[in-house]
Image 1 (cartoon, rainbow, N blue to C red):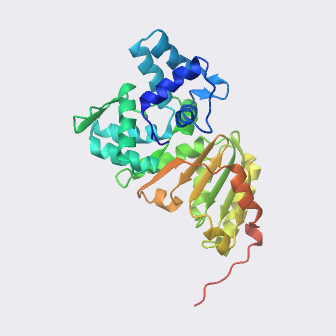
Image 2: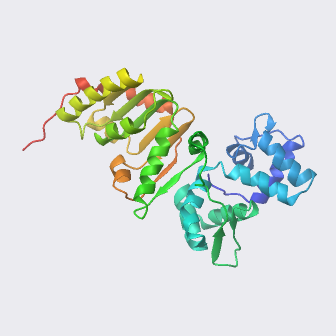
Image 3: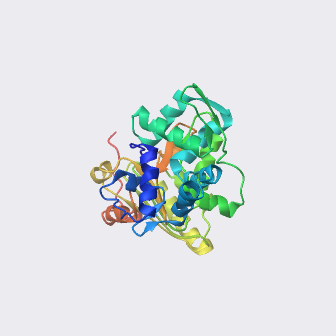
Length: 314
């Protein structure tokens, strides 16, 4: 989410909508941001938006307004990823936080990143002053919670992966899988056979009933086909999970470079699975690719069992 307008203008627009203005998320940038934050919808204020409006403009309680804003921001994946990465340090260089925000939002504008820091400061999640080159992190998004609550929170998270936290990288992947509900759609151009081990360890048949793996032909061998056949049979028999793997042609696969993990209510852009397992750098970030997009690609794939393996020329 890019904060390319002032936060004051966003707050003022919240007040206008609360007091009768018609939301216009197709044209008004402040309205778009309010909608993305879950503060307004097409009917006006949401419960979260009403809480923030009441605290800021009616009771004019600064502490209550900060708490209301904090609850909204804690549900933003970019905020989660930033604070999760910086919390262990306690204090971080402002320039480093700005760089990380530019990475997370995939937007190079420093002013927009600093706007985010101002909003986080207003919400009491960080202690930031533009005249100080250091900032303190006041909220730990990785605090321990009951497992079911953690799985629900994962839908609102993003993660930065680092060579310094190989175990944390693996945990981010495991938490993503544990948060899946009903179905999983997973696209990776060079899907490794390791994906079967990861799924075997984490899938719960009471939460997930179907999995669709989609890949290019690069890593498909007869051994992979045989292993998947055994895996598929056992997962269906023992856990009641239907698992399919289809393969696109090399040319079709080349058209979809990024990797995507999609489940009910959540879509994420992933690094390559081997990158995560090897403890390298990368990001797990929200994606606009949805189940309908995936299913269009799926139609063009050949079932793994029917895929013809082309031996590399010697």
